[in-house]
Length: 131
Length: 370
Image (cartoon, rainbow over all chains, first blue to last red; front, side):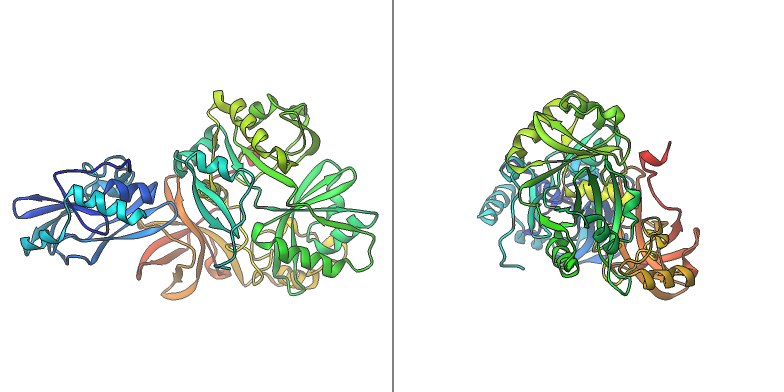
């Protein structure tokens, strides 16, 4: 499998990644997810100040053909969103682990991170899903 | 339908080797996109050229002394206006004016070739057979033995000229002629459904891979790439070319669909004429409009359209338009909400978002810019 994996993030089964920075996490979608979507044409982000819950949908990413929910990998308050995705949704295809971060959450319960996978585990998960 | 095996074109293995994503479409397993991605494929057709496997479409051959008279009765278009070596768009209607299918008619010296939508092939054949009666017409579904490829874009003529003996400079828009392509006997039609100049090619199915590869090789210097169904859909939608199952179907008549140009009341009787004439004279209750999103969001087929706080219709096609970089769509709305500039809302994920009616099309086709 020829996807990029980021060893500095943790992954959810629904293909979001979470990068811990202090008591906050930055959230995006994996290289596998952007490839599966193909050309991204629209991203809808949660509003700053709203509360998101681990495993619940809080954003939408749309490709030429379909709209897909994005699930929050952690519970907490949204403290920032990536406004650049409104004008340049194609960043999701170009730089999924960098410029195309979706939103930033102040974690309510850091122990939730234990429910997420590291890059190796996520890679193995994708391989098992492929069979 | 679900447990019915999907049909594959002769290019199926080629598509898979090329890394295409294959999807189920109208009973066929077709490439929706290649690794290039649908937006680049779309842009390439607008700027250079793209190659489409469209063999899922159905082809009927009609010949015999009464073929033209029979077509005249079955078509809204006046086929007598389509001389030999010409092609034209037409529709088949039910008695109530609803559309059986929209088709392309190719007039060749000794027969008519009628190209129908993949999903409607069996229905159309049954419809035609049910009406042929004892007319002296030979009607044959030649879809299996006839292959169909579309080469579309501003560089299409230069590319095709390298591999055909037809003098394309002498073939007008919507002209049709027999010749060879890559050494294979072919019917060349200056037709297509992308809003660009281009060609649709018909030839024996056994030569599918040979012709496809020859065209790709001939077009390489100009950046020709294979394109999938996703690009085909965004291209035709930008040009506001209707698609069966979206803008047209059995519950919609061609007048309401804005296809008056393909309906000729002056030719005499044809199936659906009375119903269509009534709509024409009284004015359609609903009209197909083009809209653009004022607030961001992707409208999609089936999304509710609201005007003045009341639900007035549904989106028939909605998408991101790569050429204009806008979120746009088409919808049927009551005539009073059809004027350009009318404010509408599209309900996207339970939330109304502002849109407005705009002039059709979103992208003016190359052949209308002369």
